[in-house]
Image (tube, rainbow, N blue to C red):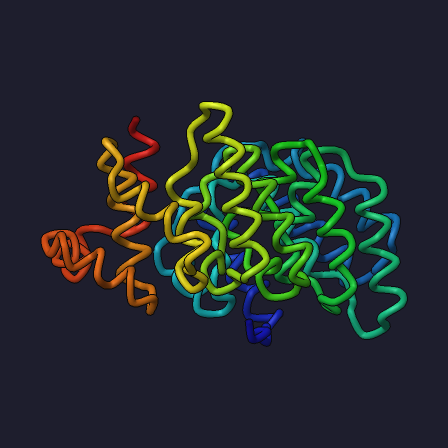
Length: 298
């Protein structure tokens, strides 16, 4: 995927506006004081203390979304959304944008110091900030470490509504992220770039994993089959045929979506046998998001 270029000052201003809209006078006053202090005397010690102290002064209430700001953030950084954040996480991510980035070694050392000393909620904020950090190639190994973590908030901060992994992770690390998301039952539809980063190796891993689950009599997440769309073959098409013949409607719908978006001739032939499903896909009433919603309701 093509890397994006970030206007950090614009993003900083947007996040600051979102903080202002949270109607928390104590938090706003304290953050203003810390910002002024950082601008007049940019000491690493004070920066770290502010980052750590955030929850005591901001609280942990959920961020109230503001449509105009959310849309502007999405335009500035495609895929970036402060999904299900608390005010302390929002403030910490905003605070990260005050680290001077002119000197790479100094910047990297300061960010690494935050990672090295972070507890769970601080780590979640740091990983949420990945799309905003300067020198993005420096955080690939950190991201891979986070994927291997067993801390759910850290996993979610990396995997869900975060454009950084799709933009920068190499194929092996990306595939590990997707499989870890499946193992830990994360909502796959909230992984940015899931379909664009699909690859032949991942399609093979997904198929083998599904066979293992089926052999053990365990269910398979229908959303994972979308990763086969561009890689259908004689080896894995029987899996789509099995879905098509499933007694569970959601599985047949998943098979229909794979067939619809695939260029594999047998897939087109299979879909032609149920034109009503093709019509639903054409009109937008059958999508992967719809399947995700169905699974969540069940």
